[in-house]
Image (tube, rainbow, N blue to C red; front, side, top):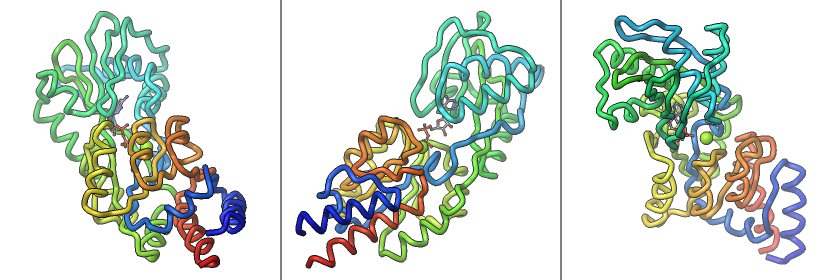
Length: 294
Ligand code: ADP
Ligand code: MG
């Protein structure tokens, strides 16, 4: 490809809302056959809201909201923001400040609130700590996940106390974007740290058949590497801190301009407005740019 044609392609990209790190990126885009899509914030809006609250027998809903909300207030995760905002709104109280707090990437949060050792996150966070969920909460988790919700299990002082439902919605245009990727001959794959049932529900809504769910942040890059070892040329689309390694490992990293700085830095190109429909446009642009000069 001539530098002039690549420069022109880069310029056209800017008009479409695609920021390209360097002209050589367009040449890489030509080889891609597989597109791995992060779920939260990429296929979905990532603007989550707190839904139903389920409590264990003998536990008050306000306690679950106050203790989980206090911890989540200290985390920047989209799930955490929904829990903290919902808890503050529903209890009508200021959330207490945790005495200590740890973010457990891909799992949840851990800390001390009002003298209680509190955990909030995926069920795995609790079971890893040796805390079993009572049948009523297990049922609540399964039901909510089956409806596509993300769930937050809450425990303190060694006992599971509640389950919070957090809902996200598929971005307008995501299904169309997936259909366009397919029509370009690309195989779409959904990749997420969220629960399997919620991931399956989003995948169904947008027309993706292959789903990797409950993948820990450090394993996301490994999923991409394994596809490459199987002979695929992989594009990764993501927005989170957790996606940065996968974006860097991928043959082509597309980051959402609405996402974190870490993701934007790791990507080869940025979809400025966070519009997934621009992903197939980027692939088409590179094909057109390079075919005009061959
Ligand atoms: P994704 O891959 O969808 O961007 P993450 O890897 O960040 O998601 O997180 C995976 C899952 O871990 C989330 O769907 C959520 O269930 C849980 N999780 C992560 N952080 C938190 C948190 N602060 N509070 C509650 N749950 C969390
Ligand atoms: Mg994300």
